[in-house]
Length: 120
Image (cartoon, rainbow, N blue to C red):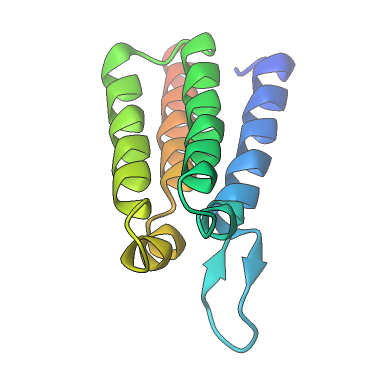
């Protein structure tokens, strides 16, 4: 069973990830984008700011007990998003499509629920 504090942290991280990757939608399409794509329009500073938020999610995953292998996968997602997202024009499109924070939350969610099921 997952304790209430872990669930609360996980839900907070999910909210941050959704805001960063899919907070808004383009009407009449299935395309969603978040603050990562919007702040990425500001050269240099925006991508660094988005990367810091992404790294916060990874840090919280570490505090929740995520193993090093999982943290490396999460950091790889952040590095790909930050590196490719920093490229002019192509990076802005990439930020809309890649959604590294949601990928990382899915990884963390899977880990937490597998750990909970193994504790029985």
